Image (cartoon, rainbow, N blue to C red; front, side, top):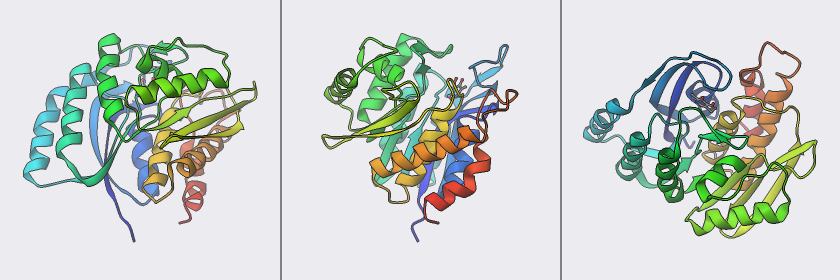
Amino acid sequence: MKYPKILTIQDISCVGQCSLTVALPILSAAGIETCILPSAVLSTHTAGFSGFTVRDLTEDIPAIAAHWRKEKIAFDAVYTGYLGSTEQIAYVQDIFDTLQKPGALTIVDPAMADNGKLYPAFDQAYVEAMKTLAFGADVILPNITEACFLTGMEYRESYDESYIAALLDRLTAAGAKTIVLTGVGYAPDKTGVVVRESGVTRYYEHKKIAKGCHGTGDVYASAFVGALENGFSSYDAAVLAADYTVRCIELTQGDPEHWYGVKFELALPEFIRMLGK
Ligand code: PXL
């Protein structure tokens, strides 16, 4: 049985059901050996809590990577999410270049923005550095806001298929390979995902349940990587990840106290079944 060993690099938000606290259980449930590199440690995520603490781990990364090289550790895939600093992105690129097995995949979720705005920790320098990482990766999973920051295209709340096609064209022209563009909806109660791979573009539409659910981008990207590493095509992995994320939101809606994340754990048995395990 295939048992890939992957590395995921993103922050630990101690409370908030996002980044590593989501990626590690989801990838483990997908039957993947999941190694982690925390980019930073925060008391909570930054979307809705105030007064959170942040410890950026940028300085620790070169020594960690050097140790892994010395131990001849190498990964079948490296998947990145929320990173700790602009400077850290160069270290992550170095990990892409030196710690992968031949033919390994790099998957970048440029987790830096939503709803037309950058997250509080980031600035234009971070966006510029993220462009290099994202356009060199095998797969990127931006939402529309992130795709706009990566391409310089104007962000729009309402749009049509030609706007999305232009966004995909701009990403492709900048060097993006497989693109999984999330949060694309053409009707008020619908959202979906557009996958462009090897020049072929396909759209999967599904219901939109609630506006502004935190952490769903991380749940989505982790489920996508889990499916991809189980042999699903990019499109099929994108569909499976969408169905799983919708289930997580369904299991969370109606609980106003659970505003900060989704109850993804409750849908893990379904996720494992969706993978055919
Ligand atoms: O879910 C993306 C994310 C990850 N990590 C941190 C965040 C956010 C979104 O705001 O703040 C620390």
